[in-house]
Length: 67
Ligand code: 9UX
Image (cartoon, rainbow, N blue to C red):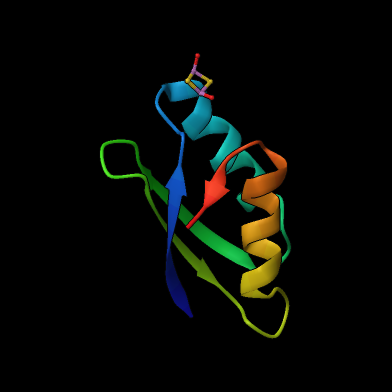
């Protein structure tokens, strides 16, 4: 399963690392790609191990809004 999250408020490389790190820590996430220019975060995950809601929460816990 692949999804694209629309994340608000990421502007620098540390933001990118925080979001990537938080998502990669979740079991079932196999790939994360953050585009700082657009705020789009492409996540590939196993939906039997992790839900879309958990992905969104992980990003929000880092302090960013998910549209
Ligand atoms: Mo960089 Mo991101 O100083 O919230 S960590 S903008």
